Image (cartoon, rainbow, N blue to C red):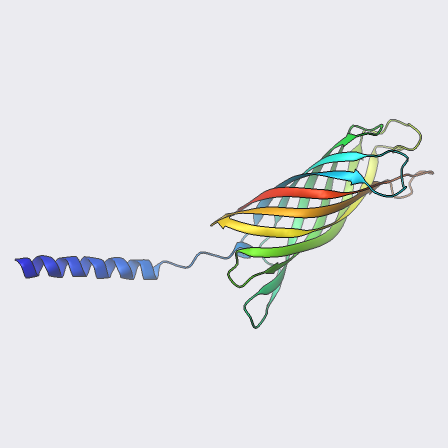
Length: 197
């Protein structure tokens, strides 16, 4: 009886190990799409406007799964994903109060071999609306264009979640549709959280 119970225990252990071995490895972060929420603060940079703008920015982004990639001999990889973003800025120290916009860009990411950390960058642009007031030096119309450059680091914390910390440069103007057409050139930092599908 003792030998019979021992055989059953060994068989159960073996089946359990086999089942664990058959489980697929977790997919890397770039294999599926992700939603990112980033918030931060940007300050006016340069002399494009007489106002010392300060923007409280929030961005809700969707990133696709990997579009194109290259794996290096050490195991790290560089890849490109599509990124679409909704932008909401609260404007301080200027005649406008808010900006809502949309932008598109690539997300260029360099992941470590373990797939737990990446350096990212990207640049792109789009359009949006600001509550223009007609004040001299402010935005002369509601319809605006935007472009940006971003860079930072992403750290995976759990299977489908990660944190980001980055630097963002954002330009908002009407692209010369009016004269004069002062712009907002702002730079600052963002912190974010990402949910992978």
